[in-house]
Image (cartoon, rainbow, N blue to C red; front, side):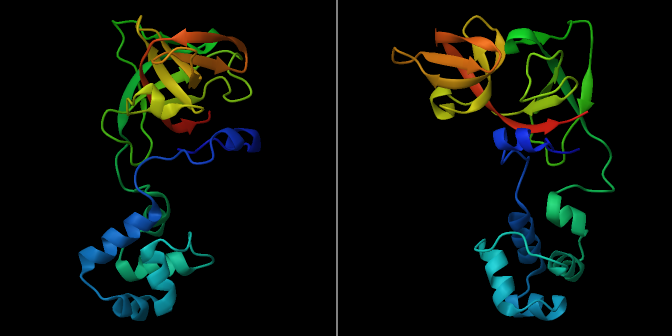
Length: 213
């Protein structure tokens, strides 16, 4: 499971990932041990000051072998500490809500089907997915990529952000949300379709993860 990998897509999606950050995993694992900072520094051979900075979140992901040293000292897998991926966990599946095609709308899966796709690591409860079909989502998404979302937020919280949105008529789309000309209404934009002006939006979901094929 990977985030969108090419440089153009990363410009659109610089922060999409699921679950807690590595810093939170580090802190929770450290607290569960009941150690002092000095003890973790001693066991990992990482300086006291560096451990303090990592635990407080003041410094981003450590360089070199530091993360592996911390993981070994805490008796956890270094891949899990860095990414949240559990090498030994069984694959988890989430419902495939539908297919994103022309116009960036989600075409629902037929009701007699029970399609599922593999979930991202650390997927939140309630996560669902949609698969991209056709070229209409270029350059943001390529055909076969899978988009995951889990939280329904008020549209006003997603202004100027790309989101999965549901309209008052039940239609689900992938659009950038912008303020409408009237309070409570929103204009929905995308690269390869005309703007949809002054729409009633029931909810807007941040995109949690993108899986390239």
